[in-house]
Amino acid sequence: MVRIGHAGRRLPKRAVFQIVTVGTGERGQDRFRELASRCKNFSWTHWGSLSDDELGKRIDEERVAWGLVLMDTSFKGLMSPSKFSTYLNLGLPILYFGPEGTNADRVCREFEAGKAFSGGGSLDEPMGKAVDERVAEECRDRVSKAREYFSAFDAKRFVEEVFGGEKGE
Image (cartoon, rainbow, N blue to C red; front, side, top):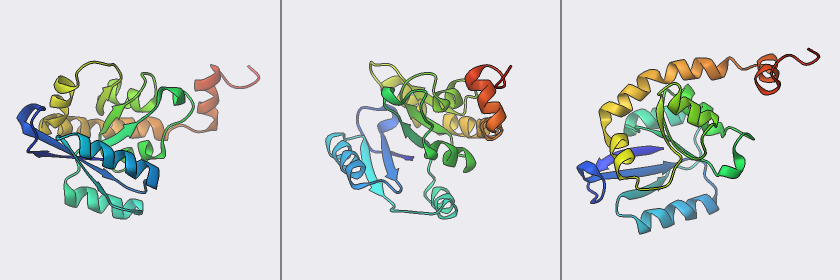
């Protein structure tokens, strides 16, 4: 998850992205710790393990702006991280870094309930948009439509989406 402060150097408005992890294993924590130590625009905190109710309360208290989803290209089409549905259920827009065409990418691009970054190049301009609190609020307002769409998936709809029709047709 990402909170946004204002004290860094490279991003617009001197923004600082405060990355908050929940339930992350030691290896993941080490990677975020390293990122925060190398980048002036990032800080990192680990909240430990929280229930969805506790997480929702902390998100409100700490004014978390985005749910962060990072996905390696090798996982495209194979899974949606559980945090993806947790963020939607908590009404949190998604800040997505990963391949195009995933569910998280669809939430961002089709439903405009987040911001997706899938290409190379400088992140200054797109991250500048993510820093804008109005952009985060606009995306947050669109989360409910994405949540409704993805919560409607049941076994029959899954078969239709994946295989192009019901089995046996």
